Amino acid sequence: MPKNLIYILSISLLFISCDFKTAEEYYDLAYELEEQGKFKEAIELLDKAIEKKPEFRPGLLQRGYCKIQIENDLGAIRDFKKILSFDKDNTLALYNIGVCHYNLKNYEKSIQSFTLALNSKGSKPNSQIQVELVLPGEVDNDSNYTLYDNEIRFDRGSAYFKNSDFDNAISDLKKVLETNYKSAESNFWLAESYLGLKDTAMACEKLKKSAELGFSDSMELRGKICLN
Image (cartoon, rainbow, N blue to C red; front, side, top):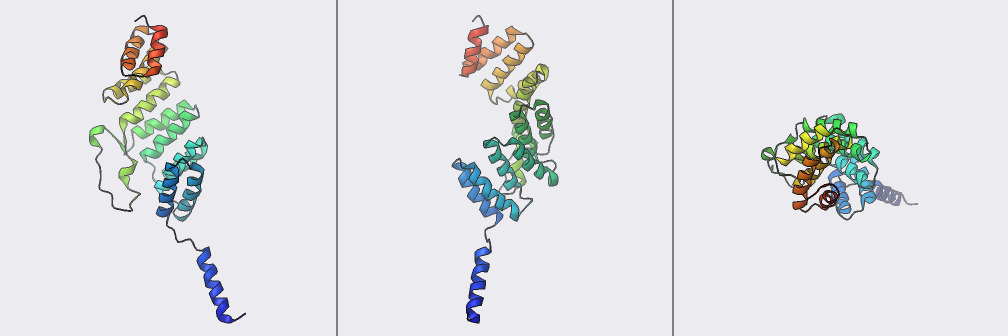
């Protein structure tokens, strides 16, 4: 074989074997698949993004989210914990670990994770989260990892209820109602918590408010336990 042909073949094989896509490009492609509900395919692309950039927070976060969608909560927890290994106060990672434990019915661990998220740097009252300027192509910005504290508190209140800690559930959900966040659902969970404490009068009051906001579960439960 001619020497120059060997060089051409070698260079061609080199280009074929090289992967010129960046972690960010793989992330964008995975996001498009995720939007189509193709979570397993998105995970394959996110694997490549994370291989190129092991501490790529958006890739780890989205891969964890995709794993939640295919009911691989343990795998998702591992991804979120990888973020915490180098960004220990990441609010979204802490919050999502709480979501995974909730899905797995590990309510005590869920409450612990939600509490850590509430106390983290990215947990903000509604009035304190501001939209920051994000440059084109910038997908890893600290502002992407903030959450309103009422979102976290709502889920922690639900976890408290599931763990039969009705007093703490009521405390959280009352604070959520003060912000008018998920009012129908918050009133419903409050009603369930009052029922746990055998306070039917308060439960019916909250069910009435929830039903007036159109929450069908409240309408059904109210019909069973309330006189009017």
